[in-house]
Amino acid sequence: MEDLNCPAHQAEFPAADADDVGPLKLVRDKLVQNGKYAYVYRRTTRQEHLTTLLAKIVEEAAEVLGAPSIEQKIEELADLLTVIEAYITVGGIDLTEVLKVKADKLEKRGGFLEGWAIDVRYPKIQ
Image (cartoon, rainbow, N blue to C red):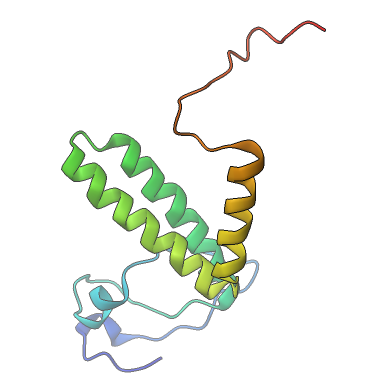
């Protein structure tokens, strides 16, 4: 672990074993570098990083849902997009391929701009 000149970096500890997984909360890189939180930090393993990024996607999506104003929704959507982009990068996923699949789906199945929904209580009878 690199020394980030932060009092929170008093201790180092290894990556968790499969049987010793504590709660990990992914935080922004610069918050750690600035020593914003009074916690002990550690770098995650690649698999932990991917797992915590997925959890962060869910967290940020919930924050978008709960944002009461358009300004706060914009903030939360920016966070969500940042985390999705990080997952793509860390996961070694080709963004060009993601965008190609997106375009193919839009062409074949459409998007979500028109607001169509189904009432799942009433399946169509054949």
